[in-house]
Length: 121
Image (tube, rainbow, N blue to C red):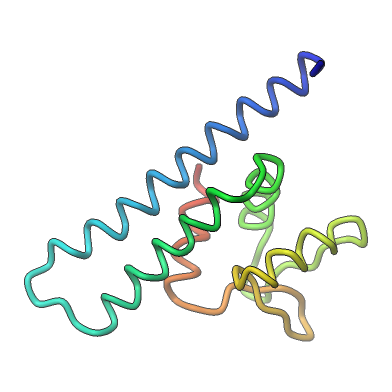
């Protein structure tokens, strides 16, 4: 059985997860309303939707961690502690993050926008 504070964290995580999915789906839907949709726009839709798909597969703890990374991330990226490394590497495997000598970062414009979405939840 979950202790009450664990339950609170889980409920918050669920809420953040649903909000993230809602926002990402909206981002993809909004761009479809534009009359003259260029190649770039379709690429962005695809990114928003695939990002939403990935978010839906993450555990609530991972979504909360994703939000934590988003909030703590500067232009250089995000450098996690050893305990966070495995989660960061999982995000890297899912192509949510890339890594350079300064740490982990979100590579695309759309990626920045998507992370910004999660950051503000």
